[in-house]
Image 1 (cartoon, rainbow, N blue to C red):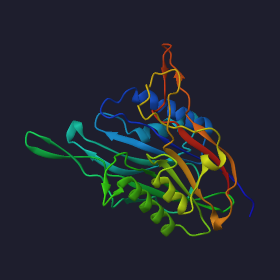
Image 2: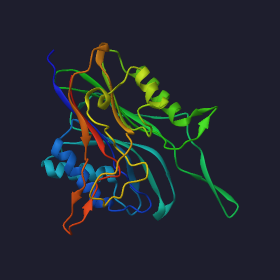
Image 3: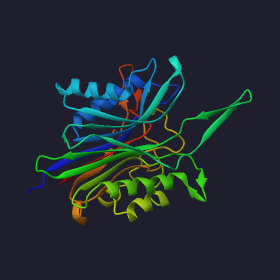
Length: 292
């Protein structure tokens, strides 16, 4: 069986709830960037569905398909959490955009380890949303190779359970779910905003489970994807200073991964018609082309 190229990417689209700063325009910029590269699979995090606001996943998909001139991409969405009623209702989660043959339906998994957030207002205790999930779908490439693709957005909170960070526990559950559900002869990709830096226990556990950090192995430079102090969306220059977004790969049958490229995605602000600058997101994405 000959190898075929497969391009994958990940991006946290940053819904910026409740301010929604420039959200509609930023969705257009994200769609244009994805359409320009036409990845086989794109993993999105912070995908928002809110009353009075468009479903950002569907908006991005429809914009890409309009640019491409066909119904090229399908959308799978997994709800992580939400809150509110009526005009204030919202939910957010993770999504996959794909344009290759799917082998079975998308599946989602809610982590057992979660951060429990709450606030007291007027003597009443209200739960705040922070539940996290993962989603996977199996794809079949033109040459018959199988690709199991997983997307997740791990918590950014520092809370621990029995001395272990909840984020690290979620990474362990993600790796266990992936290894349990994917056969050794299948290539497995993990994508997402894992909210931890390369030297952390969170990332170390995924690597010990057999996953290769594609930027570390095949990229160049620091590969920063986020500003720990929050980027100014209208900044003309990047201020990113930490790498917390990842594409990770467990090659089929333990073989060395064949990677054509691994680099940043949506890494520059775009000049707007009024002369100002706008970043597609507060994150820079990661893109890679594999030979499977």
